[in-house]
Amino acid sequence: MTVTASTAADWVSTRMKGWENVTHTTNVLQWYMNKELCGIATDGDEIRGVACVRFLNHSDEGLEPYSHSPNGNVTWVELVVADQGVAISSLFNLLWSKYGRRPFVAYRRELKNGKIRKFGIKMFDKMNSLSKVRTELHGRFHR
Picture 1 (cartoon, rainbow, N blue to C red):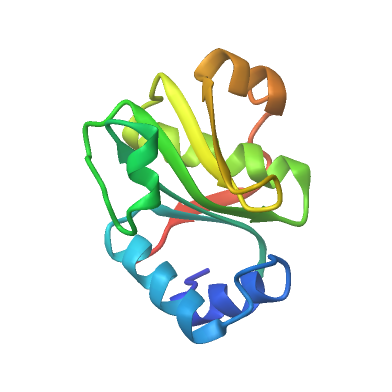
Picture 2 (spheres, helix red, strand yellow; picture 1 turned 30 degrees about the horizontal axis):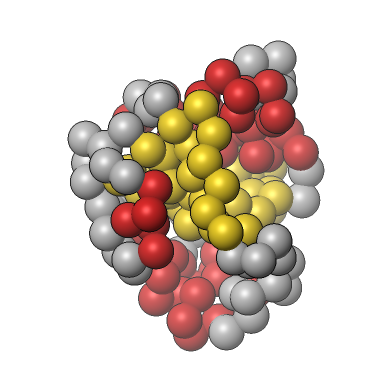
């Protein structure tokens, strides 16, 4: 299944607070897709999850839009939304199979005072049970 930025934006905009503006969401997703930093999990012809990440040297660089250091040791999670828990694991497995696991994962929690949260990869694995979940959905990078 080929998924365009606008198709993914339509799906994301109804599921993720702060991403309701379809035009803005399409533009952001297109940037990530062009850089092959957007993974989309599908089940047949249905989108089940979308994740966009970039790599940084320091987690606070995530506050700078489109900042990206391909060899950085922090996986910055710009967006992750899924309608099944296994889709999140599938998306991270997809992204890390292409780029390798980094020592840290960071993201900004808008609902929690907008603070950056940063975890070591082992703690992130425990929180998300990534090591115990098999990839059950098809996922691929989209351009």
